[in-house]
Image (cartoon, rainbow, N blue to C red):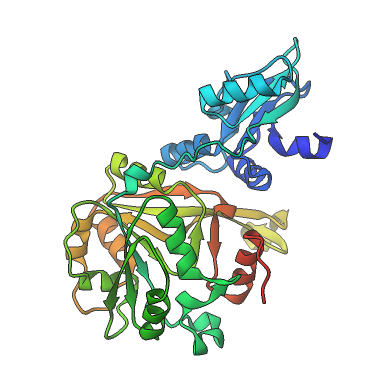
Length: 357
C-alpha cells in the first residue's frame, strides 16, 4: 500500500467527528485506525461508532478518543489467508497488521467477492415505502417541462427507478408513489418494466405537499412506514435505519446528513464601538441537514389534515411543539445524494460513476 493511500485510513485520537467522517467518506471503507505520533495503534473507529456517538450526544466536534474501540483485533504477520478467516469469524472488513512494538505497518482489507451482504432483508420484508413523486421539479426546468422529475435519468436510469431498486435490494417489495404532475408518464414507464415488487399509485388532484398526500393512501399500515422524496439517494443500511427507529421510541425519525460549508471570506467578530475582536479566515461550518427520508409511525397519518397542503416539516413542527419524540439518524455527507438542482444532479452522476449524456 502506498504511503499516501495508507494515510486515508489513519487518524489520531484528538481528531474531531467531522474530520473523521470526511476521511471515512474519502476512503470508502467505513473505518479509521487511530495511531499516535510513533504509529502505535491505539484504536479503531467505524462509521457505526460515529453514528452512535452522534445519536447519543449530538456533538460534532468531540474527539474520536471519546468513542473509539481501544481493543481492535490485530495481526502480527501479513498472512492474507489467515486474515480472511479472522475477518469471516469476527464479521469485520479490515485487519491492522502491527509489529512486536504495536506499530501499525499495514492493513488487510476483506476483498473476497463472495462476502455476503450485511443488510438484513427480513427486517424490511413487510415495510412499505412511500415515494413523494407529485412535484413539478421547477428547479430542474427545462428538463421538467418535458419529463416529470421522477423520470429524469441519472445515467440511463430514471431517479425514481434507482430509488426503488435500492429499497428493493434491501428486501422491500411494497411501494406507493404519490403522483400529480405528468402522472400518466410515470405510470406508463413503470408499467413496461419487469419487476418483483408492487408499485401502487396515489393520485393527487391538487398538490398537497410532502406529507399531505399520505392521507390519500387507502390502506391502514400495521407498522412504521418509510417516506422519501423522489430526488434523493441514500447510501446507508436501510434495515439499520428502520431498527433504530423501532428501538429509539421515536414517533418520527429524520435521516440526516452532515453538511460542511466553507464561508469563502474572512468572518469578523466585533465588540463595542465596532472594534474587531477576531477574524476567522474562511471558516468551515458543519450542520446536520434534513435529507428528505423519514421513518414514521403509521398512526401519524391520521394527524395529517385532509385535502390540505401540508409538508413533512409541518408534521415535525407539530410533534415537537406537543413535546413528542422526533429523532434523527445521522449519515455522512457523501452518503446523501440529491438531484434537486442541475449542479447537484451532475454531482450525483459523478458519485455514481456515471457519465451525463
